[in-house]
Length: 152
View (spheres, helix red, strand yellow):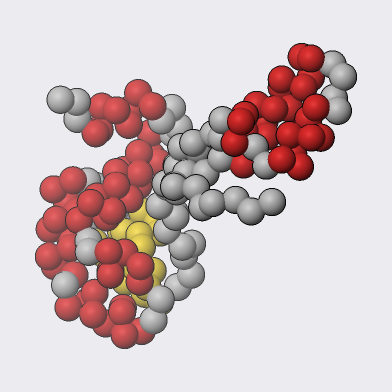
């Protein structure tokens, strides 16, 4: 097991004063609920004060009720944080979750190509080119799931 702080030191060669903020962002993502993460985000760490922006005054008030708990939790991860300032302000949307990789394509067998495609492939005079185009057509016309019957 490797501590996150050690990984951060090795992978982020930036300024040393930026590292507490990065640790704070990491703490926020691990600690707060997804509902809160959508409505509030740490923006800046300045002279021991962590500034958290919220989408609305209602969210700012809600987080103010939990300010002491949040502060105690963040201080365990980032001792440099001495105070929280919660206010309404702009922040970027969280990064989108990674997309699922596209499903594997089940290529058609060359014998399964539609007759019209097979006729056009037969017109290609160069054997190597015809083979390459045939493979491409088989992949292109293949599907990730059970193929529906073709009508030609």
